[in-house]
Amino acid sequence: MHLIWLLAWRFRSDKRQNGFISFISASSTFGIGLGCFVLIILLSVMNGFESELKDKLLSVIPHAEFKSVHPQGIENWQQEVSLLQSHPEVTFVEPYIKATGMLQKGNKMKAVEITGLDMEFANKGILPSLLPAAQWQRFVKDKNAILLGSGVMAKLGLKVGDRVQILLPQLSSDLSLSAPKTLNLDVLGSLDFRGELSNHIGFIHMSLAAEAQNIDFGAQGIRLRYRDPFMASSLTREIGFNLKPEVYMSNWTISDGNLYQDIQLVRAVVYIALSLVIAVACFNIVSTLVMAVNEKQSEIAMLKSMGAKNGLIVLVFMLQGTFNGLIGTALGVFLGVLMAMNLADIASMVEQLLGVQFLSGDIYFIDFLPSELRWHEVYMTAFIAVVLSILATLYPAFKAAKINPAKVLGH
Image (cartoon, rainbow, N blue to C red; front, side):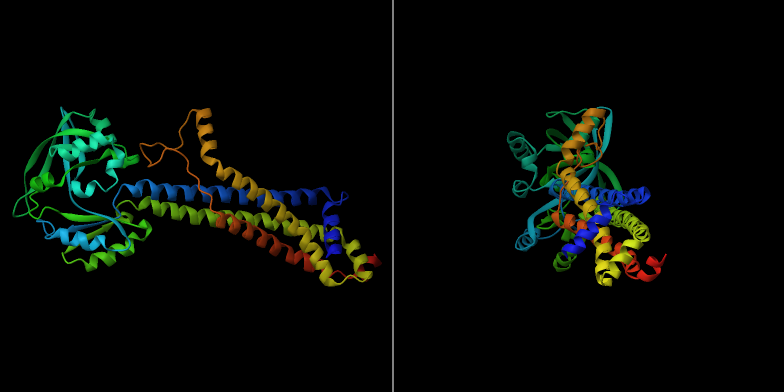
């Protein structure tokens, strides 16, 4: 093995080597390194978006909703809530009433999705952490109060303490629309959910919503959160089929899952595309070694005439080509990991330097470039690059072993 390493390194570092071969060799090393570098960074960004989606957006919106088929609501909803609270995968359950209405302040109007919450359950949810304690307590005590998304308040020019009017559509007994119900409520808090969610959401007391929407049983539906939100689709079907009342089932992958699906699609495309980039760079190893074999025919013939076996020649040229893959992989992985671990800070510096913002909090649910490095993906990237580099050396190495010493030395 010592002889194999010595010959491979000397063949690779021979200063008499053709300049074009050296250039192709360097380009293969650079291509492999670049592919690993970009792949690690982009996968880290996709991981960052997925984590922020789970920790921020999915910490606010319900993971599943079960809405009654009947306009009167869910009868004995307290019993259903108790059963759902005992489910091992469910972390939070609450009844709700939802309606879409028009919010009016002066001559300005905006469509808002109003959710009625039971304060006993809402106190255990996420909303209290999004408001100052004093504002939340005032909202809990005041039945004629409303909490609005920050985007809604900005659109209508509202501030905490203002009084607004809400028009809620009404269904008559024959399911035709009748005159809307008008509610005059005090704005007691502003909720910043980031992104589009803040532009169309509001919360009121469930008892008030039940009265306004003629929900006889007090709750229109039940919504809940899971321990693992990415299991929402299967768990929602399982739970929904076991509920006694007839309900419409919905989960976040239906209402807000387009972003998660986009992340998964981009991740798959990135992995395939950049793996192909690494593979193309490895083809340069084939070119380099084929030209190196043609250039080193006399040296190979001399080694074989001195007793070198075909296996030794194969290993020498495989190792020579693998050097390129190992060096490129090591550099690409090192720089990719270094960049991925500091990507948010680097992006922030670039934003300040150029005076631009890559992600707007008004559109996306975050306003910075996230990054989360997962080491198993780093190892997989390095493994793919090294394996492709080794495979690229097989043809030239076996070609070198087939050289006939008598024919080459005879010339």
